[in-house]
Image (cartoon, rainbow, N blue to C red):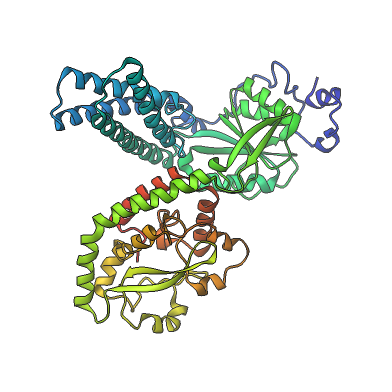
Length: 509
């Protein structure tokens, strides 16, 4: 029985629309053998390189080993620093480490599907810290034990931070290998030409995610292939056979050509092939925090969050006030020294204030250390045509309005530090889109207005993705991605990357 015959036997009403030219006659996707086992037509060069499938288990073991080594170091250092080397304190240290590692496993922190890509493994570490604290508290209450609270709390905090750093280092090494073509998953992208083209281009732009596209399948082999430099390996009806012949590890379905019962049958067939099925639902830039699966009436409904939960908003506000206040306190000597340098090297005040547009269009006064001469605003109009940026944002690599001290302040973002006061007072957030000028907002159209949906930030997604090196359209793209998908974990990751970008002075002027 062929695939088409099998569909007809079920009375599939959409069959007439799916009769397309394929490479040959194929077995039913629901059969025990949905492909013909034959020698795979792979060139030696295609098979070269270590695949992620072969490395995933080893990488998970490396992560677990790193957590263990970091944990032993943390427990040892905290015990030595507090001079708490009694048998009881050592036992508590071992208990904290075991509880933490166990909860990382419970939170799926060693799951190969979340390791090396995305925020999932860092979220698992955060959850593990909270779960370990709860587990220790419950055991202490049940057994009526006296807990050395300061010691246990400090150990858990350092364990979480240490696990973050260790995983970050391992991930950086993995991303370098993937940039060189190693540790990738052989990927087949299938669907209509336009959807396939979009998915392929996005995957190629981010090789660190680990998808190596080896070819595409279109609704019909006679369809015009998108200009992405890949072979059309077959039609949709050929997917199981193509996946088998080319040793595909992942099949990504794009667009609406395959859905419902055919998609279900394809999952059965790919299970026989040994390939993963990934569906690109077409929800552009809508990521994990906003999407959840809701099984209802025998259907798998994809629920998209349309507004951020109140608890997440409160958590972000608390993070801004507390962490922003601590950073402002720590940065005060740097701000004071920079202010003295500004006043000593150019006439005018040390600080510069400017009206900016905040959340939902509200205006506020933003503070900065002055990095330009006092007549900078008057000279701005004459320099607009020399901007290095397209779109509405004005930037110049060699801006003549910037003072010598100002160049140093800008390179390391020291001039931005007074904005921590705006963060503490609630006008800004630590992380968010940059606060625009009123004249820039006057030029906003359509989707760009979405930038004003959240509080502007001291740093943001585009600042850690290229800073001033990005085009206007790329900056808007990243800002909208943040507005639609922000989470506390994402904020913490952006803050971490901001520190690295600032210390390196990359993309700043």
